[in-house]
Length: 84
Image (cartoon, rainbow, N blue to C red):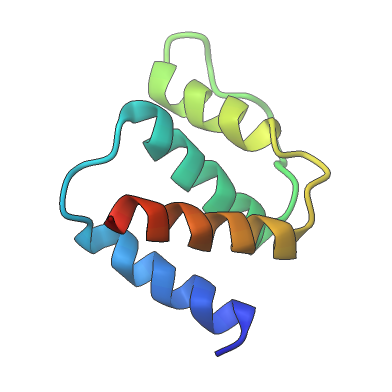
């Protein structure tokens, strides 16, 4: 399989992990998925009182400049690691 197919499979498997990932890993999963599928973050950071959306935005913004292919590979690797 190619990287895109591996990424799509990992996306499916991310919803079937044996246990819920830590908050830190959840943010990593989100940010890598967004970077891989959409590229660099766009738009304004959510409001100060929307803590979850702000944390997600910050995590995604932290990957700015990472290629979509690199993000896909890191996403696949992370999901495989979390599967055990």
